[in-house]
Length: 446
Image (cartoon, rainbow, N blue to C red):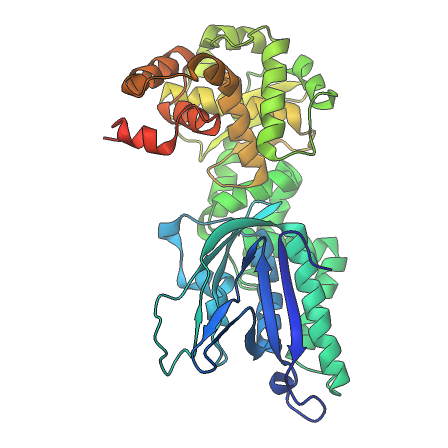
């Protein structure tokens, strides 16, 4: 059965079957569909046809998927400038090779629920000796991690069944499948592999580092450790964890957010929705509970609701590797370590940590607010943006904005609500108050 967002299908086996090699036995017409796009649609220069399948051996494709399973499924999307050769070999189908022409399909990164996928068409319209086909489609979209898992497993099982029918019951593919099956069924092995992937490591590349890092999960919480790992590279992870622990141990002042935590169980919070929808609903619920409606929230008002001295919200912890919250010994207590030097950044990170604290009931000592694009960090950022500056307010009050006054309005909202201009512009674009073209033409980017 085809999945909603991703599918790999063997349309026809072309190999001779019994008595042939693994590669020849699994030669096939294969199609890959990503949402409404066909990644394998090609122009065949030899047959002068356009078709939706590629003629390749399924075995090297299956081996590549299994060998890179954890990195494909768990590794977060890198900053474009930081893409390494090692990363490309693990995430781009072009790396499969084996003498076949593969689509330029890249599984760019995972947030835990969704995976970003890019595909680039081939530019040349003339056949050459290296490429008898030309891939026709370009797209950028996301797919469900669940659909990815289901489709890959189904594809591998299909290839293994073909090998069995061809009398081949032992191969590198069988070994990879057995190893991965063992990891899937053992939570300890799975945790080890997931942390490796978050650190951008190949399986067994640095077992000492990963085993050492996993021990920190007992102090910080396993999910917090994974969020930090996604932010750090292997070389710096241990030092980052030590630094965070040292600062957490010294935290003596805590906000009281116990009353707000009941929002997490509220009937009006759609927790099964996308992270930004969940975050938006929770942000508006907290604004209502704390009596802010659509009004700006001053540092003094926020400190009052948190039962803190306002000076604590204005402190910069420059030694912190990232902003993070520290859970107090008593329920509902949260300390703030904010590492951003600017007022708007500290306010934003404070709101991120409040949102995370009331949304997720996790047994972890610290709450990281990092720069990664995991589901949790997406939730934090969406909550902070809506809590500090409700996008609905912008839609209601500025839906008829004059293009000539865009710069002035953005500046006013930014100052009044204590957020960056970027937050305001994103709200305007998301609420269709302002198109990106209008934003550019208003010279705000100049």
